[in-house]
Amino acid sequence: MTEPSTVPDVTSTTGGTSLHSVSGLTHTDTIPAPDRGPSTDVPLTKREREAQWMGAALETPDLSAVPLAELRVLANRMFRMLDSDHPPLQAGERYAAAVEEIEERSRRIAARGEAGGIREVFKDSGFNSRFELYFDGSLAAYIRYSMLGGQLTLRALVEKPGFEDRGLGPVLMRHAMLNAHKRRLSVVAGCPSAQAFVEQNPQYRTLARMPR
Image: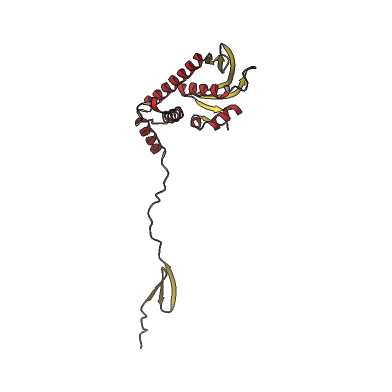
Protein backbone atom coordinates (compact mmCIF):
# COMPACT_ATOMS: atom_id res chain seq x y z
CA MET A 1 0.00 0.00 0.00
CA THR A 2 1.38 3.32 -1.01
CA GLU A 3 1.66 5.96 1.76
CA PRO A 4 0.38 9.42 0.90
CA SER A 5 3.12 11.84 0.10
CA THR A 6 3.77 14.75 2.43
CA VAL A 7 3.61 18.13 0.78
CA PRO A 8 6.00 20.59 2.42
CA ASP A 9 4.93 24.14 3.25
CA VAL A 10 5.79 26.55 0.52
CA THR A 11 6.00 30.10 1.80
CA SER A 12 6.10 33.21 -0.29
CA THR A 13 6.12 36.70 1.18
CA THR A 14 4.54 39.60 -0.61
CA GLY A 15 4.04 43.07 0.82
CA GLY A 16 3.85 42.09 4.48
CA THR A 17 1.70 38.91 4.18
CA SER A 18 2.71 35.24 4.11
CA LEU A 19 0.94 32.75 1.82
CA HIS A 20 1.12 29.17 3.08
CA SER A 21 0.07 26.29 0.76
CA VAL A 22 -0.54 23.10 2.68
CA SER A 23 -2.14 20.12 0.93
CA GLY A 24 -3.67 22.44 -1.63
CA LEU A 25 -5.27 24.76 0.99
CA THR A 26 -4.26 28.46 1.09
CA HIS A 27 -4.77 31.00 3.90
CA THR A 28 -3.37 34.42 4.65
CA ASP A 29 -1.68 35.40 7.93
CA THR A 30 -1.34 39.11 8.58
CA ILE A 31 1.94 40.21 10.08
CA PRO A 32 1.25 42.58 12.98
CA ALA A 33 2.35 46.19 12.57
CA PRO A 34 5.56 47.10 14.38
CA ASP A 35 5.25 48.70 17.78
CA ARG A 36 5.91 52.41 17.32
CA GLY A 37 6.17 53.06 21.02
CA PRO A 38 4.12 55.48 23.10
CA SER A 39 3.10 58.84 21.66
CA THR A 40 5.38 61.71 22.58
CA ASP A 41 2.55 64.25 22.37
CA VAL A 42 1.20 63.64 25.87
CA PRO A 43 -0.46 66.55 27.73
CA LEU A 44 0.93 67.51 31.10
CA THR A 45 -0.84 66.30 34.19
CA LYS A 46 -2.24 68.76 36.72
CA ARG A 47 0.65 68.08 39.08
CA GLU A 48 3.19 68.65 36.29
CA ARG A 49 1.55 71.95 35.34
CA GLU A 50 1.61 73.07 38.97
CA ALA A 51 5.27 72.11 39.23
CA GLN A 52 6.02 74.30 36.21
CA TRP A 53 4.07 77.21 37.70
CA MET A 54 5.80 76.81 41.05
CA GLY A 55 9.20 76.67 39.37
CA ALA A 56 8.46 79.86 37.44
CA ALA A 57 7.29 81.59 40.63
CA LEU A 58 10.42 80.62 42.53
CA GLU A 59 12.67 81.74 39.69
CA THR A 60 11.34 85.30 40.14
CA PRO A 61 12.14 86.26 43.74
CA ASP A 62 11.84 90.01 43.03
CA LEU A 63 8.15 90.47 42.23
CA SER A 64 8.58 94.23 41.92
CA ALA A 65 10.14 93.63 38.50
CA VAL A 66 7.19 91.57 37.21
CA PRO A 67 4.64 93.40 35.00
CA LEU A 68 1.29 93.84 36.70
CA ALA A 69 -0.60 91.61 34.23
CA GLU A 70 1.88 88.77 34.77
CA LEU A 71 1.72 89.32 38.51
CA ARG A 72 -2.04 88.80 38.44
CA VAL A 73 -1.57 85.60 36.44
CA LEU A 74 0.95 84.40 39.03
CA ALA A 75 -1.48 85.16 41.87
CA ASN A 76 -4.26 83.32 40.03
CA ARG A 77 -2.11 80.24 39.59
CA MET A 78 -1.02 80.22 43.22
CA PHE A 79 -4.69 80.61 44.18
CA ARG A 80 -5.59 77.52 42.15
CA MET A 81 -2.80 75.51 43.74
CA LEU A 82 -3.89 76.51 47.24
CA ASP A 83 -7.35 75.13 46.47
CA SER A 84 -5.94 71.73 45.48
CA ASP A 85 -5.87 68.76 47.86
CA HIS A 86 -2.10 68.86 48.30
CA PRO A 87 -0.78 72.37 47.54
CA PRO A 88 2.99 72.85 47.21
CA LEU A 89 4.68 73.98 50.40
CA GLN A 90 5.64 77.42 49.11
CA ALA A 91 2.41 78.19 47.23
CA GLY A 92 0.89 80.07 50.17
CA GLU A 93 4.00 82.18 50.65
CA ARG A 94 4.23 83.10 46.96
CA TYR A 95 0.51 83.82 46.79
CA ALA A 96 0.70 86.18 49.77
CA ALA A 97 3.75 87.91 48.27
CA ALA A 98 2.01 88.38 44.90
CA VAL A 99 -1.14 89.80 46.49
CA GLU A 100 0.92 92.12 48.68
CA GLU A 101 2.79 93.41 45.63
CA ILE A 102 -0.47 93.97 43.72
CA GLU A 103 -1.89 95.89 46.69
CA GLU A 104 1.24 98.00 46.98
CA ARG A 105 1.06 98.96 43.33
CA SER A 106 -2.64 99.77 43.70
CA ARG A 107 -1.78 102.08 46.60
CA ARG A 108 0.87 103.82 44.51
CA ILE A 109 -1.57 104.26 41.64
CA ALA A 110 -4.15 105.67 44.04
CA ALA A 111 -1.54 108.01 45.51
CA ARG A 112 -0.70 109.32 42.05
CA GLY A 113 -4.38 109.91 41.49
CA GLU A 114 -4.64 111.87 44.74
CA ALA A 115 -1.65 113.98 43.72
CA GLY A 116 -3.53 114.82 40.55
CA GLY A 117 -6.62 115.84 42.50
CA ILE A 118 -8.51 112.53 42.15
CA ARG A 119 -9.23 110.60 45.34
CA GLU A 120 -10.39 107.03 44.71
CA VAL A 121 -11.57 104.83 47.58
CA PHE A 122 -12.78 101.23 47.37
CA LYS A 123 -15.01 99.78 50.07
CA ASP A 124 -16.66 96.44 50.72
CA SER A 125 -20.06 97.27 52.18
CA GLY A 126 -21.06 93.94 53.66
CA PHE A 127 -24.24 95.42 55.12
CA ASN A 128 -25.45 96.38 51.63
CA SER A 129 -23.81 93.36 49.93
CA ARG A 130 -21.94 95.47 47.43
CA PHE A 131 -18.49 96.71 46.51
CA GLU A 132 -18.36 100.50 46.32
CA LEU A 133 -16.08 102.97 44.56
CA TYR A 134 -15.89 106.56 45.80
CA PHE A 135 -14.43 109.63 44.10
CA ASP A 136 -13.79 112.70 46.24
CA GLY A 137 -16.07 111.30 48.92
CA SER A 138 -19.00 110.63 46.57
CA LEU A 139 -20.27 107.19 45.68
CA ALA A 140 -19.45 106.80 41.98
CA ALA A 141 -20.22 103.14 41.28
CA TYR A 142 -20.96 99.86 43.00
CA ILE A 143 -21.31 96.15 42.28
CA ARG A 144 -24.03 94.18 44.02
CA TYR A 145 -22.98 90.70 45.08
CA SER A 146 -24.20 87.64 46.94
CA MET A 147 -22.16 85.26 49.05
CA LEU A 148 -22.70 81.55 49.58
CA GLY A 149 -19.98 79.61 51.37
CA GLY A 150 -16.74 80.40 49.61
CA GLN A 151 -18.44 81.60 46.42
CA LEU A 152 -18.90 85.27 45.55
CA THR A 153 -21.39 86.04 42.76
CA LEU A 154 -21.23 89.47 41.12
CA ARG A 155 -24.84 90.43 40.39
CA ALA A 156 -24.93 93.91 38.84
CA LEU A 157 -22.72 96.92 38.17
CA VAL A 158 -24.27 100.35 38.74
CA GLU A 159 -22.65 103.67 37.83
CA LYS A 160 -24.16 106.65 39.58
CA PRO A 161 -25.44 109.66 37.61
CA GLY A 162 -22.60 111.95 36.65
CA PHE A 163 -20.05 109.10 36.64
CA GLU A 164 -21.20 107.18 33.58
CA ASP A 165 -18.81 106.48 30.69
CA ARG A 166 -15.74 107.23 32.78
CA GLY A 167 -14.35 103.69 32.76
CA LEU A 168 -15.19 103.03 36.39
CA GLY A 169 -16.53 99.52 35.75
CA PRO A 170 -13.14 97.88 35.06
CA VAL A 171 -11.55 99.78 37.96
CA LEU A 172 -14.20 98.51 40.36
CA MET A 173 -14.02 94.98 38.93
CA ARG A 174 -10.26 94.84 39.54
CA HIS A 175 -10.77 95.93 43.14
CA ALA A 176 -13.47 93.28 43.57
CA MET A 177 -11.26 90.55 42.10
CA LEU A 178 -8.35 91.50 44.34
CA ASN A 179 -10.67 91.50 47.35
CA ALA A 180 -11.85 88.00 46.43
CA HIS A 181 -8.24 86.91 45.94
CA LYS A 182 -7.28 88.05 49.43
CA ARG A 183 -10.21 86.19 50.94
CA ARG A 184 -9.62 83.12 48.75
CA LEU A 185 -13.12 83.22 47.33
CA SER A 186 -14.19 81.79 44.00
CA VAL A 187 -16.00 84.32 41.81
CA VAL A 188 -19.01 83.85 39.55
CA ALA A 189 -19.40 86.55 36.90
CA GLY A 190 -23.16 86.74 37.22
CA CYS A 191 -23.84 89.94 35.28
CA PRO A 192 -22.96 91.14 31.76
CA SER A 193 -20.45 93.70 33.05
CA ALA A 194 -18.55 91.10 35.05
CA GLN A 195 -18.62 88.63 32.16
CA ALA A 196 -17.29 91.24 29.73
CA PHE A 197 -14.52 92.13 32.17
CA VAL A 198 -13.41 88.50 32.51
CA GLU A 199 -13.49 88.02 28.73
CA GLN A 200 -11.35 91.12 28.21
CA ASN A 201 -8.94 90.26 31.02
CA PRO A 202 -8.02 86.57 30.66
CA GLN A 203 -5.68 86.71 33.64
CA TYR A 204 -8.80 86.53 35.83
CA ARG A 205 -10.31 83.45 34.19
CA THR A 206 -8.72 81.09 36.69
CA LEU A 207 -10.41 82.98 39.51
CA ALA A 208 -13.79 83.81 37.97
CA ARG A 209 -16.16 81.64 35.97
CA MET A 210 -19.35 82.18 34.05
CA PRO A 211 -22.66 81.12 35.61
CA ARG A 212 -23.99 77.70 34.64
